[in-house]
Length: 249
Image (cartoon, rainbow, N blue to C red; front, side, top):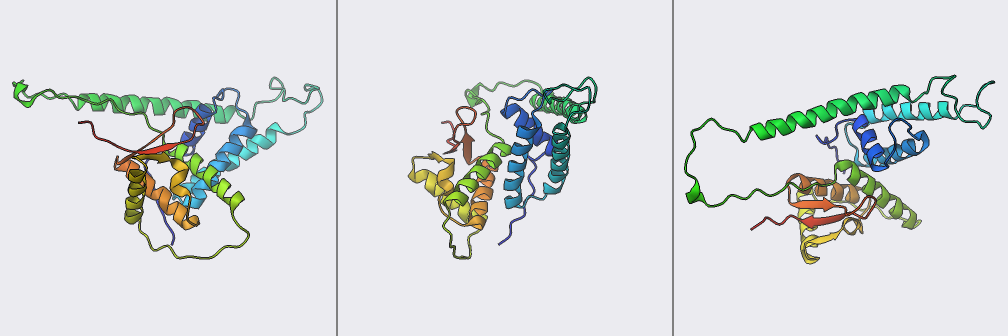
């Protein structure tokens, strides 16, 4: 069975690059192209498995990253640094255009976030005359939880696929997956409940072939979208945990 999905949380390839730069704690003005390109392509492999509709524009930027990386590896010309490093005083840095695009994109992204926060704050203001609400009791507003974004989940999904590939037997059987996303969502919730409402991200992917793993991943995204589960990470690069969202009493 083939699954096609378009996710609103994917804002574009530049958004993925900024995510990787922040996660890897890279200086945006001195990007290590080899490391960044490798991480970017790893994410693309997982996105290809998920058959995401936006993949084409990500491939265009991947080609740009590879081109910049290749220019960084070109041999130096006469008069350049003897240690083989790129002399940026004599030749333009091939990363300059990419850095400029990222900085400009980050400005617009931060401005969009600021406008969204202003709109949400303004939505709480009304022109209706004040009334006595004491009869309604005290209203408590819970703090919003900072959760992982989809790029974090894509990275975890790619690592899980790689581990399964290394452990896979040489022979395989073809099975037909008859379950729907809705049914798989019920399975995930049942698994969480049997484990006390919380389990490791990789526990949900212990069994199943490639289509089944994709189905599980899409079902998990849908549960997150419906705010039925929370995916958390204690520290950078730690294992991800999935928990059932408990409403405050």
